Amino acid sequence: MGRFLSIILITLLVLTSGFVYWRYYWVFGEGVKAGELNYVVKKGYLFKTYEGKLIQSGFKGGIAGSIQSYEFEFSVINESIANQLMNNSGKTFDLHYTEYLGALPWRGNSKYIVDSILSMGGVSSGKVIDPKAGR
Image (cartoon, rainbow, N blue to C red):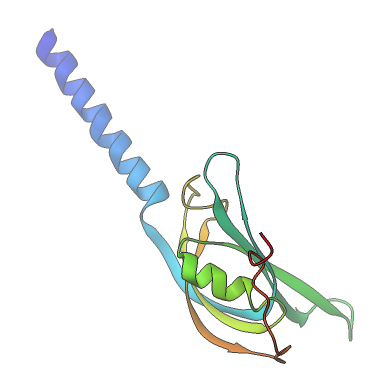
């Protein structure tokens, strides 16, 4: 009876481990999104993560001549990438991302993780003021 319970316990452990890996660590897809950076913020109750939104323009089907905005919500793990995005809000970016099937609290609120900036464009506002300089 003890051997039977051990086999069932090991089988459940292996299946659970496989499911957790597939759901949260296996890369489902990779790609590039382009658009105007709306915001990047650091937030969270227990795990402070960087969350952002990219606004993509496009044409809406059905109504001729109308334009619809598409939003791409993402998380950023790398602090230097997040800082570069925060300092250049409102500019146009091409962002490379990795897509997972599920989000983890310490990785961010989104299943889309931006891991690099491919290009940045837009009008330079000139001087950039560090938000932490006044503290």
